Structures are given as C-alpha cells and as structure tokens.
Image 1 (cartoon, helix red, strand yellow):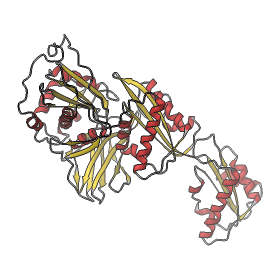
Image 2: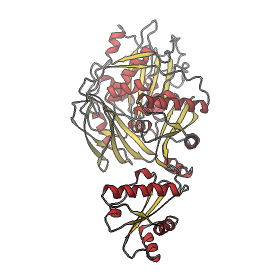
Image 3: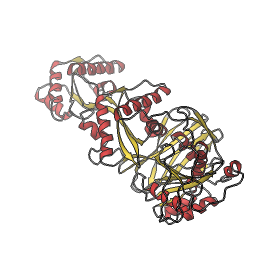
Length: 573
C-alpha cells in the first residue's frame, strides 16, 4: 500500500494538456453514442498498420452498432524521414508528476482494475502518442516511443502501447483494452501502471484517437532532474521491485564510455550517486538488477548535460520486412542489423560462429516452446550453463534477447538499452551467434531473437604453452634485474606430473619436489587456471628467493569450462 500511494507522486507536472485538440480541431465533435470504431493494438516497442474494424458487442451498451466507414491512409515509406514535435513541454524530471483533469478522469474510469495503477506520467506520454497516431495513422516505432516516454519523464522499462480509433468510444472499451494489455506484461499484470491520452483527427468524419500505455511497474523512483550541469552530482534512488538482487547503474555519456556505478541497497531501498561527465550532450543511465528470470533492466533515464531538453525528434520509418518469412532469413537480417550498429561505432564486424548460433537458436526455441522470456531458462539455466553444456569455453561471453514483430525494432530496443548495447559494442568479443524463432502473439507473428557473444578460449598445446610461460618468467627476471633462470629438465618433469593430476596445487608440486630430492636449496611453486596466456600475472614470490632454476608445464583441458588452461611453475635454488 505504501508504494501504491507513492505512485501518485512519481512524475512531472503536465502543462497545457491536449492543447493539440484546440490547435488541430477548431470545434471538437460532439459524442455520438453508439458509434463503433477501429481498434489497433500491439506489444512492446512494436509497430503495426491499422487492422479490421471492431465488432459490436451486444452485451456492451456502449458499442451496439456497426463501425462507421473510415478513411484509409497510405503506409509510411520505409526509410523515409519523419519528425515529432512535442505538444506539451518536456518533463523537467523523472518522478514527481502532477495530475491533469484528463488523468483524473481516466483514473476514475479505470479504478475497478486492481492489477494496474494509473500513472500521470504515462498519461503525459499517452497524449503525445495519441497525437502521433492521429498524424501518421500508424503506431510509433521504437525510437519514437523511447523519445516520447522519456520526454514525459517516465523511466519505465517494458512499455506496451495500444490505440483505439473511432468516431466515438465508450469508456468501457478503454478499460477492457487496459485489462487486455496488462495481461500481456512479462511477469503478469500485478503492480503494472497505465496512462491514457487522446486526440482527434480532422476530416469529414473526425475521429477520436485514444492511446493506452501500460508498463510492468514494480520500481519506485525518487525524482531525478532530466537536465544537469557538466560535472554535477546526481543521485538515483528509490525502492526496488520485490525479489530484485544485485542492482547496479550503468551509464553512457557523450564520451562514449560505459561506467558501472555500485548501488547501496538497504532492503528494497536503493541509492546510487553518480557524477555527470564534463562534456555536454546526452547522458544515459540504466538501473539493472537480477530478477528470477535473470538480469533485467528496471529503468532507463536520458539526462541532458549542459543543453536544453529536446522538444523535437527526427527519425526514419523502419524498413519493410514483409519479405522475411522464415527463421533463417530473420537470422540473416538480425545479424546485419547488429553488424551495422557496430560499424556506426567504428568497430569491426563480429565473426558469425555456428556453435554459438546453435546455442542461441536453441534458447529462442526454448522460449517459444515453453512460453517464457528471459535469460534464465527453467530447463537449461543461464547462458553460462548453456555454453558449458555445448562445450564451448570462453574468455568472456554475453547474451541479448528480444521479442518483437519487427527485427529492426528489436535491434533498436536492444541498442537503446545500455546493458544490451554494452554487449553489442563489446570490444572483447570476437564472435557472435544469432538464433531466431517465431511464435504467434495476439494474432501476429513475433520474432524471438537471441544474440550470444563470445571470445573463445584459444587452443594451446603443451609445448607452445610452456614456451610462452618460460618467456614470461624470463621477462619477469629481466625487468627486476635478476639473472635469467635456467630451464631445468627435472623441475619441468615435476611440473608436468603435477599439471596432469586431478587438482594441481602448489603443495602438490612441492611434495613432488621433495620426493625427487630436488628441494635441498629451497623451492617455490605456483599454479593457476587461466583462459588466455597473454594475460597471466606471475606472482612476485617467483623472483624474490635465491632461485636460479625453473620448470614449467602447461596443459589445456578442453572438456572443462573456462578457465581451462592449467599452469604449473616451480623454481629452485
């Protein structure tokens, strides 16, 4: 109850609500009871063209006649530019919104829905989206949705949007649409938030456009200013959803550097303190925590450093993907979109790895077949578990997943999220696997996209590994001004015997040295498991004693998970 009470204080005051109506429509058409209308809905960050007219429902006294004829509109040209100009001033902060008269009206209409709470910030965003739909007659693509939601001061993640278009509309239809949309939220509708806005189109039969936005909610965010000075200190705080663990804030500024900031958590309350970059521009912050289904973005904020908040957005309509009819073609397209994002950041393309693609493809199919969406599978575990099962050891790896009817919008959404963008632009990754599966979703096809990134552990032979580590020992002695160590065949045999044992250890090495009668003048042993030999850090103790001989053994265990390169070094007097 305490958190629900806070929801009414979350977001920023709305000014000049729906002045678009008086600007675009001189005389608002009177309501005509009984008119039916078109209903259009879509899922998270999705885009669809208008569908068939809705049927009258005899049990609903607010919709009892056939839909009135409506004009048809041409679809936007793929790749063509479009622009959004806000109808209300952009919110000055995330959190702390005031209620408009329209918000109160719709909150009253929806008060019978227990699963979701009305949010005036989402109402602000919904009004902007209603104008967008009444202007372009299609739902907002991902980039437009992100701009509108941020401009309204909503730090929501996992937003669903829907539109109802008619010459009139009983409010019972809005409540039904909210209830249907809330049921599509990942993890269920309980704790979700909703906002509703409307606008009118002009023409011979003016139409009322009602936009509905639903988010999964669960996070309470204290107010955060959306405009800050260079170098300013910013505090992000609030209350985490139930069950959230290991929160952190990932940021990405105008300098193009990812920064991870630790979060102080006390029960559900959390606080993170960040310092804004000194360069003017956009500064993105993403709050991430681990939920039962895996790492999950909880909120993303876009702050403006040293410049006004934008009131206009220029974008391009998504490409036409109707020719993509199967999963194989979808994978080709998904890879091209990923590589294009890397190229725009000046990064080389990743090598498509068939083994990683099999892992990715299996996870997409698993999500489809078992009706879940997340990094943690009830049957295969985490991506680390899946790579171990595939016997694919990596130096480093990561995974992105998306669900969307548009492959383009799926990649747009991944790139916008900082945690996913960090994988897409990860300089340590050299290979990627792409797996796509499709499933029906509310009468339409939805692509389930999995990207698995990795850098495989390099294959190392015993001879090559031994030579590499001996060279490191020689270089360590040189930089410390010591005489070069002599490679000792007997110490090398001891090291080789230990590296083949089930659990190599320094004590095991020294026991073998003693048994061989080689430790009369002292000895020191070191063992390690690594993924790459060129990142080995030798301990200082190898160079501090009165030692002159060295024995080295290296053996890779390909069936073990990384790190699977075992090193044994022993030095003696």
